Length: 582
Image (tube, rainbow, N blue to C red):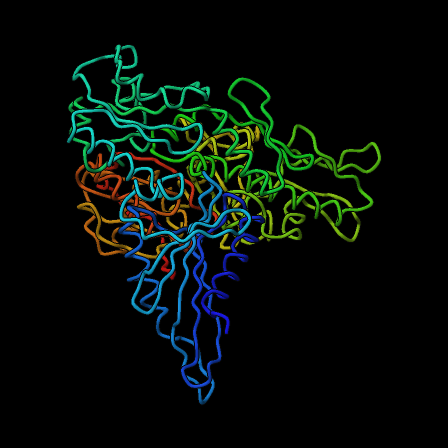
């Protein structure tokens, strides 16, 4: 008689490989449970998806899967037919490891975690003992489960032994810690025979980057990039200069990770200049630098696939949306000609006559920074008259939505410049370092960016923004105490960092004291941490992780980092209306 658990396992592995084949590095975590009826022997399978799973130390992660997901799923939650009693026979939880191409699966039985499996691209499965730590996981799979945890282990080993420690994350990426010399201004130039001996094992591969993570120069980097926030244990020894952190990396391996991510979305990546890539989908394209994201990946303690997803997924998503919109516009506007110029600008022609030009990547929908919620709405925004087959777009007043005609107000949001997918000069706003503060026109259903216009200078838009603050809607989903302050969660609540009066209204609605000097941290677009004292180092990293947990599953496609922090004065009059959502 066949083994039902083995058949269940084989089917799950096959489904996972199909998913990985479709999504590549964006393949999400999945769990499946096999239930067997104790009375009839009938079997059924229930599946869960985890688009934004938590990480952390592998041992703690295994226990979290057991205590959270498996403990809940062990009890059959569906409506069973009369005369049946379903009981959990086995469970499987899988995570894809793009650095090495393996799928890692945790198998659970009635008593809890039982074993793990490493599944390759041909669905060949190898049984593994449950890994107690990062080193064991790396020995079993060829990469770390959580690189930041691995970094902490390297530091601990260096402190304990007084000798350096080096580990390969994946081909083309080696990390290590060594005994430091406090006060050394340039550790990369210090002769160290032991250091070179450690790297001799990787001599066959060409590396083009040796980056020390705790030199004086790196203190100028944004905190979210740097080890004091994410390292945790051992940060004190690194801060004192007693331990030095370094990464030896091949930048071409990082670019390959970007190409893998793009290929799964049907996009093409080509190197067009020093430190720049052209991302394209059909006739649409954009150029984006890769060198800074590469260094940020090293300094943020991320693997190459994680860095590619973090810094390039939003741009690729915007190309996806733009391409789908272009395809739909061409179908809807036939026999007009819809072409593309400058990589992103749709040009509509009737013969030789140009009827309009619009940047596809700046058409903004309500639930995403880029794209559109429907072709009909886009055509309305562009001013297309279906009856006459012509465009008759006129300038719409600032207090009217150009899509649906409903009353609107001028709003102001902040976005990372690198993630906009459009030239900031095509948007009405101000570039401040790595961010763009831009003006939008918002109604309850739509949010569209305002474009530069000679009759509407920034002073006019700012005046309209200020005039509409009393009617501004502030969306809150959750408020929780965190890091000696409060964490606000809600759609675009991160942009409240720009306006203390709206922030004060949100805090008062949450029944939180709101006065005096405060520190505000927008880790992502939909969270804002407000504290009395500055939050730095490991405490800031813990707050960032908590903020990511707060939005997980709430706002699809908006998990990109915002990383804006500033001091705010809340001795102001509150303005705006707060609404609560689930």
